[in-house]
Length: 269
Image 1 (cartoon, rainbow, N blue to C red):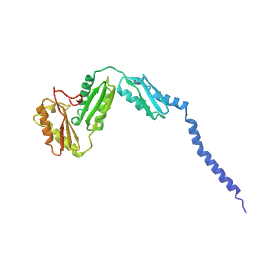
Image 2 (cartoon, rainbow, N blue to C red; image 1 turned 180 degrees about the vertical axis):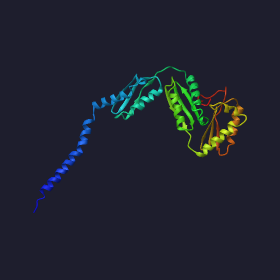
Image 3 (cartoon, rainbow, N blue to C red; image 1 turned 30 degrees about the vertical axis):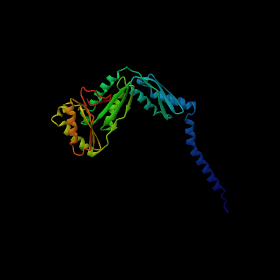
Image 4 (cartoon, helix red, strand yellow; image 1 turned 135 degrees about the horizontal axis):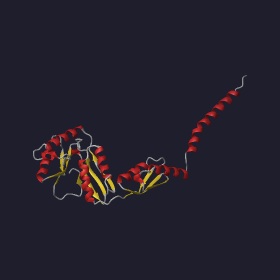
C-alpha cells in the first residue's frame, strides 16, 4: 500500500509557504510606517511643506495625537481658511485647531460693509441671475455675517469668497440660504421680474445693471429686498409682486433711500 506521507508533506509545505507570502506585505507595510515620535515628526514635516507658501510665512503648525494646531498670523481671512484646508490633506491629521489671527490693516466696520455691499451687488452682473440674489451683510468688529438668499450655490460661494478676501475682515460667517430648485419657482421669478421692472413707475430701476430691487422665491413665497427712491415705489413693487399668478405670499423688505435702516445691509444697491 502506497504511503500518503509525501503528499501530506507537500500539502503542509504549500500551506506554510502561502502563509509566509501572505504575511510579507503586512510586514513590509508595518516596517515602512513610522510610529510614535517618528510619526509625529513625519506629520509635522508634511504639514510644514503644505504651508510653504508666501501667505503662510508667519504660520506655525504642531501636531499631537492627530490634531493639528495652527498659530500665527495671516493678512487675509481667506488665508486662514486655506491653511486649515491644507491641514486636512495631511496624512494622520484627524482634526484641526485653527488659532491663526488675521492681522492686516484695520478697517472701520462701516467701510467694510459699504464696500462689500457694492462688490456683492455687482458680482455676476451679466449672467442674468443677479436680480434673484438677495444677500444681507452685517459687520461687527471686523466679523462679517452674510445672510439672506442666493439663487445658486456658486452665488453663495462667490459672496463668501469676496468677503474672505477683503482687507480688514477678521472672520466670515455664512448664513446664506440657497433657494430650493423648482421649475414652478423659476417661472414665478421671471413673471415677477417682468411685473416689477416692467411697471411704468419702476422701470427706471431696470437701467441699473446691478438691479436695485432683488426678488427671492422659495416655493411660491416671495421676498423683496433692496433700496428704492421713495415709499410709493416700495408700495408699487409690493402690489406688482402680489399680482403674479402662483405667488402665495409677499414679504416687502425694500428700504427707502435716505431713511434709517437696520444694521444689516442688502447687497443690492
